[in-house]
Amino acid sequence: MAGRIANLILLGLSLSPFLSFGQEEEPTRSLSFWAYRVGNGNWSGIRFEARNGEVDTLSLGKFMKGRVHEYEGPARLVFFREVPSPTPTEPDRIVRDPVAQTMLPAGLEEAILVFTSTKSETEDEFRINVIDGGDGFPANTIRVFNATGVRLAGKVGRENTYFDPGPSEPFSLEPFLERGIPVAFLVETREGPKFVFEKDLEYAEDRRVILLLEPPRRKGSYKIQATNLIERVE
Image (cartoon, rainbow, N blue to C red; front, side, top):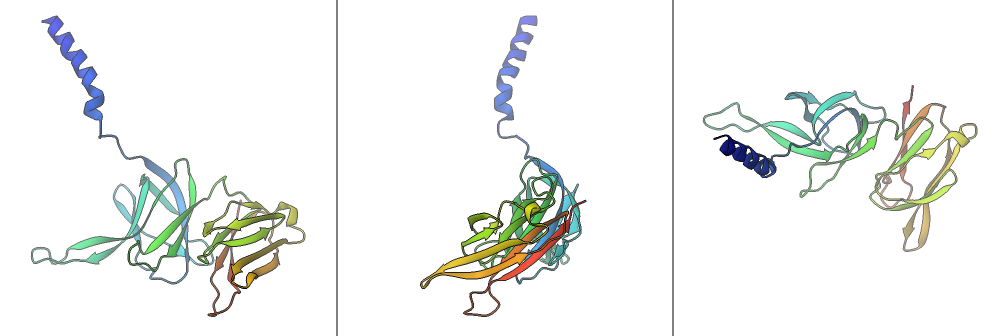
């Protein structure tokens, strides 16, 4: 009898990896985040599950950061609107209509989420870029966020590089705090490269900056819009 029980235990142990296969829990994240919005769109009524089924309404900043949200849940963070979808048996039925989603990287304790309108019928209503809001984006640095939709060549400080759509890596402001940091961007055209922005930008100490680049206001113009999203780092 004892031998039979031992064999059953060993069999159970040998099968346990197969029994647990496919039951691996989805990774979770716990972090603080705040959000900015870029471009035109319907920014109202966007919600998400903050933690333990609690639903929160997203605060989106345009020129200043929105309210800080606390999140604990799946690595895939889904934003939605709640819309009426009545049925004969459930006249008050509400469904969640997803408008944006992103995978939150592991290890982030603070994050900046930048929402951009996609203007596409085949994608979610908004695209989200996730930027490290902690040690990966320290004081006295600047990131370029290219929202023009085209690749730009440019110079930030002493560095020349290309800027694809989305956020760049941070550049140090420390050598330029006394006199401003030279920034310039150009785009390739059929007539050759054209400058779309060129200026020395001045920032106070203990700030971090997202330099937001958006398409020209006027059709046919090459001059892009540039907006400073400045956060003080304590």
